[in-house]
Image (cartoon, rainbow, N blue to C red; front, side, top):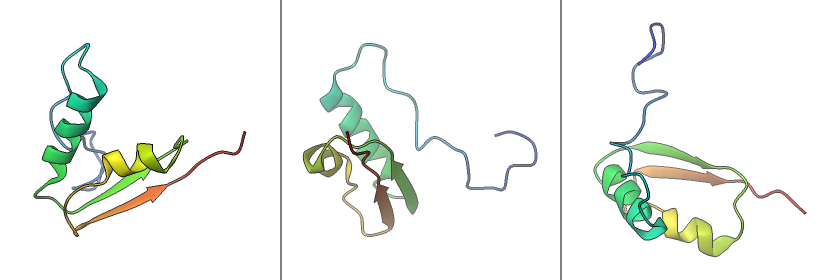
Length: 71
């Protein structure tokens, strides 16, 4: 974490997924990493509700903000 960054900010939820991993594996890795954490997940430029739904954590301790840009 960069010096001067408050604890609990600007951190990845867990290890990065393996290079070349499929979307389902990356989604599962994210959901697993967030399973036991309180987190704010910001999803920018969401394509549709289905894309957002796949990323929603299975814990009530996470807040998700999704933004979609009109095209």
